[in-house]
Image (cartoon, rainbow, N blue to C red):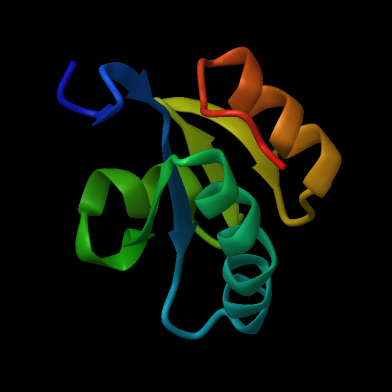
Length: 96
């Protein structure tokens, strides 16, 4: 699948954070979830929704939004423990 990262032979989740350049909360959430995603061996990508008309219409001002492997996971606030559990459920590496 194109949106997965291969690590140790296992597909790893892709975590996308939908953001806007003018969104202060987006920077905070990126900094919050980055260590969780890295510990899981997954990949984190920030996606500026203003760069794509479809994404801008879909997400608008409803950012930051965390999307895992194409599925919306959280909007505005992210619980680290829930994110860890979801990444594990999707086959991420063990989180220590």
